[in-house]
Image (cartoon, rainbow, N blue to C red; front, side, top):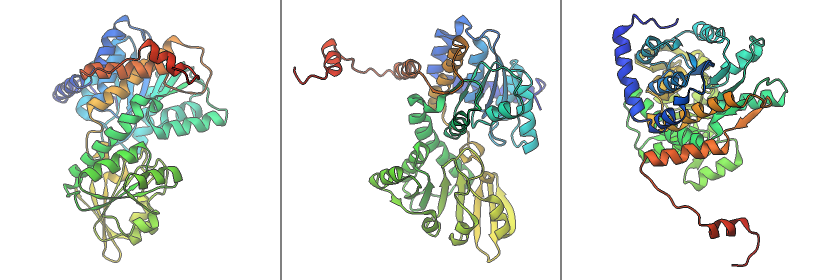
Length: 414
């Protein structure tokens, strides 16, 4: 399934898309010049399971510029931008992905990039890490990174069970990732995906957001900004309390299911919206998912409830239930912000992929780390924050010696 350099027309468009992304990712481009020129990844084989977008393409180019041999597969069957994939393949980056690939093609692509015997792996959801631990135990890995909350949760479980066999840097846990990518990136791109798929008016609708982590916060904020009446469902008392204090209604899904017009799941867990909930929903309800995997909405259960199913437009499927009620599903229950739109804006992926680049370099330079999950190291996180501010022409204050001494002292004296 690797792309052929014969896709000349498609590749030409992809080059333009990559150029647009790079113009809006100045931090990554700055690090390319400051760090990449010395080729710190020379000879390293990197396998990455990521959404093949123009932003991912910019990261792949930087990794290649830094000396790595890069092979990519898609972390979601509907997230690949085919023109970008063709452009990267023409530039000598291995790309094993296409938009709309089947489950078997998805799994075969993972196998193909792992057959390159990578030294470093970059993952989005931990499917690549899981495959390495289940089926490719003979491959010696220096280390890996993980982009998502879902993936970090899976890796932490592996660490607790004592099966994790190489160090993994949780890029998702960097301040310059989750505070911006998860909140502002997913908030905006989810709204974008829903509106591209439906073109419905958000203002005045009751929007149910399942989950109030950083992703859910961002979605709720954007939906509220568009004029929606937002309802939040949660299982965590702290997050539920925060949602209440932020001005949102909070209730269980069994109650929210009867009130919502538009539903957005963002929990990372399965069975968030079940067939039982769907039976309670109003005619015309719209279901969408911004969690990593397509398990949050019971799509099979929706099919069993329905007498007919038809595709109305790209990424919009109408299900007519046996009683005549209609429910609409976006993007087959997969990530609506990537399947129905283009994913996060380049400006926010600038931060996330700067973390990925510097973390890969760190792993290459520090090969004696114990096999556990590490947060992005503070000096990397801080370096990216400062660099991003510089690219935004924003200056901040610095502490004086007296202020530093005061903050370091436990005395109440002046």
